[in-house]
Image 1 (cartoon, rainbow, N blue to C red):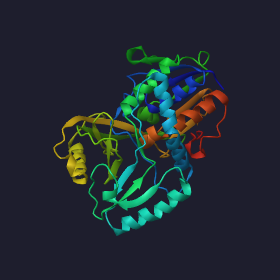
Image 2: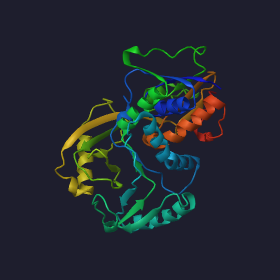
Image 3: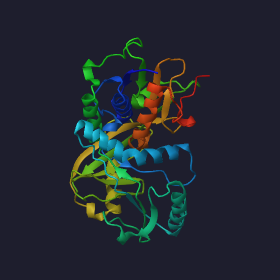
Image 4: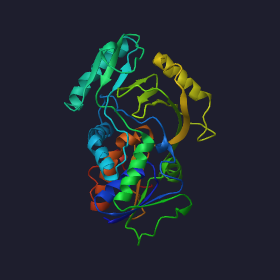
Length: 354
């Protein structure tokens, strides 16, 4: 247990864990060698969308609990720092391509009733009955879930940084960032260093604990208002409160340029317009690329680092990092400050070398 915490990494997991510890009264120092939200956490899309409600497991339950606590959690971040993270639980629409997709969707509605209970709905509805972006649906039917939410990634990171400073935490960025303080100075060190950190972390079997998957996304100047996001054909369309619409993303295991955009993003835009023809002609405000941390286990890595007393890992959010962040932050604070690990699923824990 510790009351002084150093967090290495200023992405969503590092910021969220630092915030949860500071809010509980710990002395916190966050160290980021570039700038806040420099990696994948500085992206554009911000879709907080649940796994499908079937084949239920600890990861899906953890994500559900995090999505349900998100509204109050982000509201408190905004209250403390007086910065809006862009959160809104507006739901999601998924067009259904054929009769088989409709049948699967209806079966999953039963799973939602079982696992989500009264907290949210997953329904098959007529596309015309759901307000928002006019998405093409070959069957005229869509899935409408009320659990999905949106968050503006950059604003969320900025809001956490402002809240941290308001709580008295120290943030060191860029050229001033140094190596983590010695254990005598800080009782705990949390490694939340993104995809590069996963690559450098051995898994005990002669391999790295994970790596990176590149994603490309863009922002359109299209004000859809406060309506559900749309997901189909691997593409998210997420309307944000600033009058823009985020579109993404690619998923690239092999890449030469971590932050370069190319023709693959042009294809994403073409697919988005095919999905929602109303987007044709909307100006492209920004093109972006970044690398998301993906653990070899395919779930976030949380917990103590074996053989390194007082050191912890919080990494591997991949596509669900922002949705997982509230609960990740709180269970890591439980562990670091109070010695309680019961909230961390067994499959999230970093395996001991051997």
